[in-house]
Image (cartoon, rainbow, N blue to C red; front, side, top):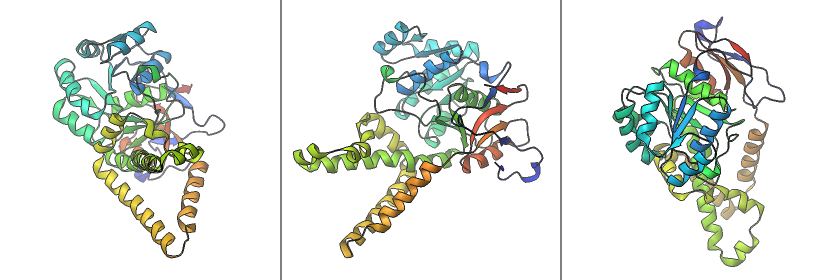
Length: 356
């Protein structure tokens, strides 16, 4: 890979190409020695993502604990041997004492209450999250926990089921995990968040939060809206239509089976970017309808979609090792993210690299 946008630092880019090969979806390297790969982890919220993260962190050898709002989930997690409480305050106090990385794994509407507790019990903690919209989350963190050392995150993994029971330790393996790379972020905490993502088996995609929100509006939030519409249209066809529903309808509506409450919070939280994606989709549907009504033809619409899907199937993200010791590494990492690249290893001031 030839890293884009090296500017005046062409002799020492913030990242360098990593080999691809049969295991290209798994991290090629990880940081070694004392540092971000050893940091304790506190997970607040143990649904599908939070529960999977706690499992993955423990499997990776991290000291990790969490809190669950549901007593049933807390009991189930404890029965499986995990260190879990229903008391957020206790979990955060412990995090502050241990200088742990706190991960908020709650929906955006629940973030206010949790962040008020962060401000009270761990005001200067290392903080990240797994919320699928980053600009609104950054705003609420700045308002309610302004001293927290916050770097946003978003693992691109999930399932149609939710709750502790739906989680699994390998959920993030091979997945992309966005880590915010905006100017002015705490580079040490950025390394903490990236190292945790790598430890779960994910690859890191650095991105500015507004660019992240625009991208996920198209490839995550719009698909949920379209699946909901498709499911409703199919159901409106009555019993005969439902009795004939097969692969294409079931594949196209799979995510409509997700928690309606969580999907609503996710999509409404990204309102501005999602409106643009919906307008694009409506424009294409309008063109298809116009063509179908006037000439009976759909070749342009179907052909464009077919080609777009082939492009996705054939796409292999370039992999890189991120060197955080160079000048202005976040700017260069943003360039890598815009180019579709993924970070599979870290080089920090006190860490070397060794094969994982």
